[in-house]
Amino acid sequence: MTTRRNLLKSLGLGTIALTTLSTYSCSSDTQTAEVNSMPTHDDPEYWQKLRKQFMLSDDKVFFNTGTVGVMPRVVVEAVTKHLNYMAADVADWPYKDDSKERFISGYQDLMYIRTKVGKIINCDPKGIALTDNVTNAMSYIANGLDLKEGDEILTSNQEHPGGRCSWEVREKRDGVVLKQIEIPKPIQSPEEVLDIVVKNFTPKTKVLMLSHIISGSGAVLPGKEICAAARERGIFTILDGAQTVGNIRVDIQDLGCDAYVGCFHKWIGAPTGTGFMYVNPNRIKEVWTTVASAQWDNHEDDGYRFTQRGTGNFSILFGLDAALDFYFQVGHENWTDRVKFLGDRLRNGLAENKKVKFFNPADSSMCAGLSVYNIDGFTGEQLQDAYWEKGRMRPRNVGEVFGVRHSTHIFNSSDEIDKAISIVNELSA
Ligand SMILES: Cc1ncc(COP(=O)(O)O)c(C=O)c1O
Image (cartoon, rainbow, N blue to C red; front, side):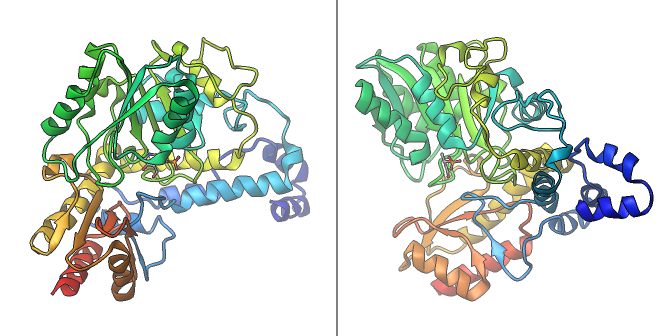
């Protein structure tokens, strides 16, 4: 930026150009160039060309989006451009906390971004708060609900600690009862899970918290049916969507849950430290804020209450905004269909090998971009290491028994999937 300023000065354009620079815009020249080089949807080589929008090295293969996603180049550029601006030219900034082009993390309502999120998950952006991740989104809800000793929180034995532990705190602190029901691994059908959940409701059940996609098995739970059954009994429903947005389509209106938490740093390819919490605007007033600043009692825009949590990282918000735009450019269905197509290709290919044991649901309509499997005689660590040695491929070890969790994403190719299948066949021969 400083170099550009000197150049402009040397061209006698200093005053005009500096005025322009003082209005920071998140669309850089390089970003525009990259966006322009996006393939058109009718291009027969669409996915190969889209792969070039990612900076991932060609000599290794990433299969661990379930842990952390990969940022497209435009996202990295948006973050670094803003970081550079903050370091070199922040004095140009005429502090205005109402500017849509300047995301002041932790203070502004960030409605500009929340509206885009609302479009992706189909809900009123006033019910959305931006958070750092799923763990703090869930903590806001767990800490914010009025619950009394003896009230039951129903959850499963397969929840991630980031979704579960804030309820453990309530259990220890306030005497609420955290009931963890057994969900099988693998699950056979949506009806099986629904039946287990419903059987475990009691008159004391006040909250139901379940993963929408279980991280340890990739199972997409029948969220709509489960939430409907809970709602009939007046139970507050929360779905943990850490593994969903960008993996499957999430439609909050259709799901009918009271609350939903998720992140963008896995399947949407945003910078790490970007998450959200949604609470139905009819119920959000019941949730106290945990982290308070000036807007803590703002019930005109409740999502803002939870978004206002003190100074955070401004630059990653520019990255998040770029990631959401990238997602829209690829297109909701195009993106999630591709994730599912590659996941199905992997599972179908591996299913031909009788030595592969799956922990995904048997019903393929309950599977998307996460596959969990092992082969006879291997631990997860051994299988993960063998993948690296033989193919420089990186799925993730998920333990002795369960083997690896293998994520498929839009930057992966059919060839990579086929090569992975051949590695497993070779190892199990
Ligand atoms: C189902 C589930 N819930 C919660 C989390 C925690 O997410 P975060 O690290 O964004 O807080 C994860 C992370 O993998 C997860 O898979």
